[in-house]
Length: 281
Image (cartoon, rainbow, N blue to C red; front, side):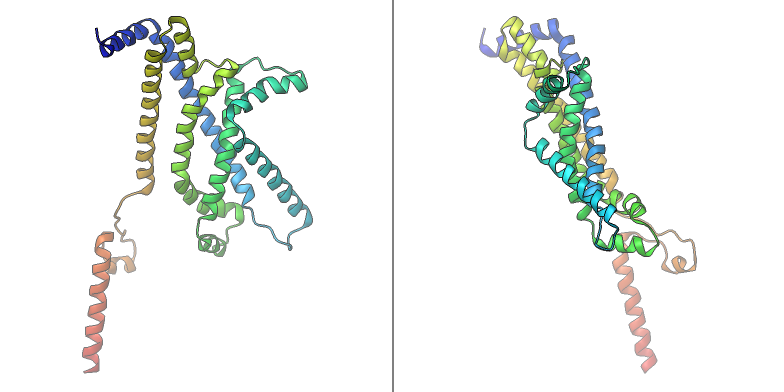
């Protein structure tokens, strides 16, 4: 029997004996990645919005002090959790906090969600800040001209546009979390990669088990990429639109698609020019 045939035989044996175990680990990875990404995005949006709140010397001293203090805290948080490996963050929180405080964690799920969430939040904070400042300042000025305050401007005008801009980064962070949850085995969390370590250590078949892991991770990330691209297209809206005739002004313009707008505009200009020439004659 050649190597490839033997590989398929080994894969079949592993799946028949440990298939349920692999599936449970895969589900734990998916749940942890989804929950931690959602919480991390909330943390990132909060930090990103706070760091973009404008203030000037005209504001009262208390407001300026609070904003400066919050920005310093957020900057320290972002730099620490972006500058250290997640595996060490898990060790520090799970083993370090009880070492200093005497309070131990009884739930591995809680610790895992906390670690992955705050790590994701640190990356999302910078993505959100970049997404907000990338919106043209005219959007803010227009909202202010309509009488909106800063909170309303951010909620109804800036954040919806920024969300669309950073959607690829949100998807990228989710895919990273699917893979990086593998480091949670260090604190005993039963995720997908820890199942590989357990099974391969029990049957001494490292490569067949690793191949199952590779296929599982690739399947999860490809499905996530497909769904995220679909969501991005939905957020883009239609490539063309029609004007709704609700008053006399829109009635005169007619109903047309965006692709016809330029031609229609040019035709009206030509008619105006011809009428002007006939008037001069």
